[in-house]
Image (cartoon, rainbow over all chains, first blue to last red; front, side):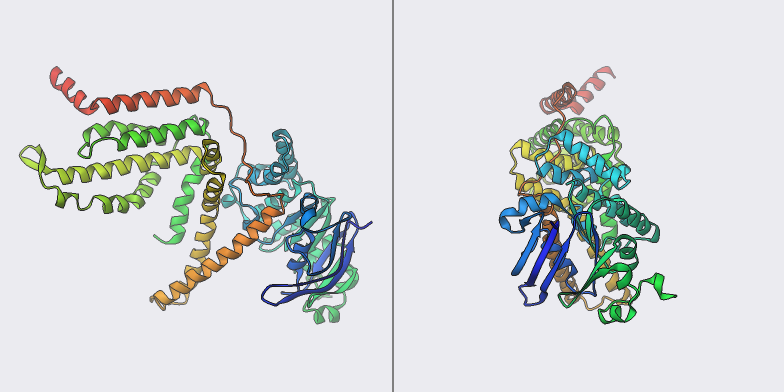
Length: 242
Length: 268
């Protein structure tokens, strides 16, 4: 059974903009899948369907055997961890440890368990030193690590990441790639950073005009310059000099 | 003062709030109740009182000194609150011209005295409140408010206001910079552009609020903000309250500077 399965998803925003029409794909447990596409292709909208922030107007999202709808949201959100594009939106508590503890406390876990989860999440991203800092004092790279830790504290089965490498310097970006390679979670990563997707995800979905245009091995997709061009993308930097 | 400086000044107290120290380790209830008591006692004096208020300076001074808060950072923020006191008391010297005090042969009118009293009380209460935030941290105070019976939603609103004030100011400062770079030291298009900038800022705030709410929902948020547990109220906290309470009582009942003056003149 797939961990995540989307079947014929249609969604239009209230202003009439049709973001998704007829998206279908499935993710197996342990898979790391890239989600690429030009601006306004519908990547972020698609991620918001996977965690129940948005509901499809047609079609169905099934997560761990349960249909994502109003009545199953509590279960859905226990098993998905989302890392938003703008870390300022994600880090809303005064200190990083409070922010990481936010979800475990909401789940009603004991303070000992909350503390353990915070430590584990910070250790997983290699940022235990951030524990008592406030988001204001953090660099872009540190904020990203903290944002990932907030998602990990839920002990999710599925990690949804929206542009995780945006605004990072080269070293911070490399640390992030190493971290995401190391984490054992099932991941769906939306990004314009094709080199990062190439490093992390063996499989990639290409989204264009609200539909999945291609679902194949990353290595095959990213070496096809003409198709990438047609989808509003270009060859990853590492292939551009060949 | 541009918005970046404002941002830095506001952030200053947050950073001090997280520093460890003997006052920082006290229970927030002890510090909050003592400061509320301080404010009530200071405000309870008559309108012409000035000398009897002087001993109360000790409280903010001790909080700032032991709490390791630079006095300059507090004074700058007190200055921000000054216009409010000026608005309240500025007409007193014109309305109440009866002399109530003579310094040598110089008559001091009741209006001037009450105006000075208002300014001094503002200084005492605002500096004590700022020192309280500095040594307790805004978050810890907000975490304590619901336990005092303040509706949770107000505490949450306050917390979010404080967290996102900096983000909003940063956004505003970026927009201001972008405008300045293309106005070539002129005033740009004046108020009309400012109105548009504010409109944009408001729309961005709506967008951000929606994204934050989504981020909260993704982490099992169900309507109440989970706050960290506080340590128990200990004997040190009780002693802090009692010692200051006693001092406030003494300073309220006796005019300590006048008493000191009498003792000194007696000795001399």
